[in-house]
Image (cartoon, rainbow, N blue to C red; front, side):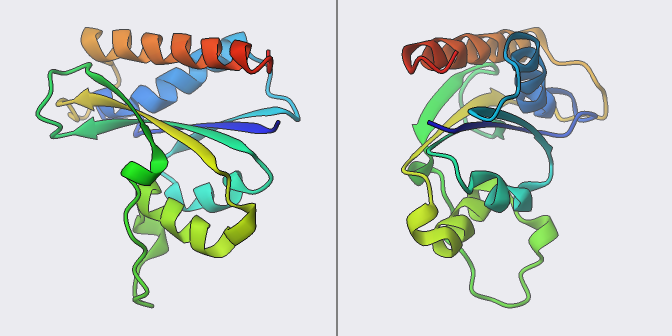
Length: 159
């Protein structure tokens, strides 16, 4: 089974960088191989379309703002629950697209090659100030995501 793990976030916007933090921690523990690909997606969501192709399982990690939950709250949801509908408007600026909308485009474009198993880890945040440090609560939640992903990969006998 080919697995892709993608972390999203802006590295200079404090807690928004939690997806990148998770990816960095996973890279310390897992070798990027033909079976498991680890992607630091930054803020480039359109590349999701290409990163999905050829994988059977996808794990996405990102921050979520305005969740009405305490900072550091962890959510794990199937991608179908957070996917935004694609817009057929030809004026949609692809470089401004978020990953949730990119998933919808990927489903439309890849059709039968679109992976059935896409899980999304979201971590509640509030701080997106121009700084590079994660808050303690968000960093702890990121560490929990790393643990959950490693456990899942062990159960799948991928590592």
